[in-house]
Each structure stands twice: as structure tokens, then as C-alpha cells.
Image 1 (tube, one colour):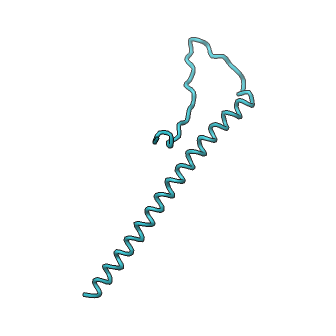
Image 2 (cartoon, rainbow, N blue to C red):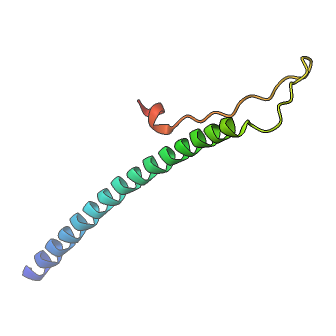
Image 3 (cartoon, one colour):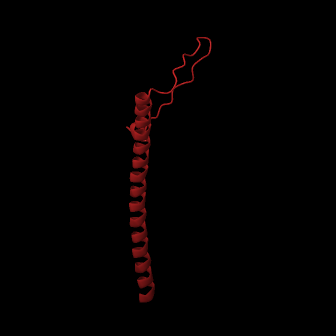
Length: 82
């Protein structure tokens, strides 16, 4: 009977350690995801700044009867959560 309690206690401790590790991993994944989207946003902003400084390439005026393509925009997930 004592052996069964020892096995039960060991399983409980192992489950608590695994649960704690899973929580830490989830928290780290959230941080990495946040950092990824922030870097992606910053890269987009810097790309736009470089294009402005470089003159944006050849300036071609679109004809009025041809619709212009929509501009590319980036919205970070962090701003959507708020």
C-alpha cells in the first residue's frame, strides 16, 4: 500500500513539474511571437523610409481610368488585442 502512495506522489510531482514547464514555454512563445511581429512592423517602417529617401524609384503617374492597387499596410497583432 505504501508503494502505491509513493508512485502516486511521484506521478503528482512529475505532473506539476510538466505543467510548470508548459506554462513557461507558453509564456516564452508569447514573448517570441510579440517580438517577431514588432520586428516585422519595424522592418516595414524602415523599408518605407528607405524608399522615401531613395526617391521611391521611377515616378509614374497612373492613368485615371486604371484603378491604383491598394497600398500595403501592416497592423500588428498587439494593437488588435487591445
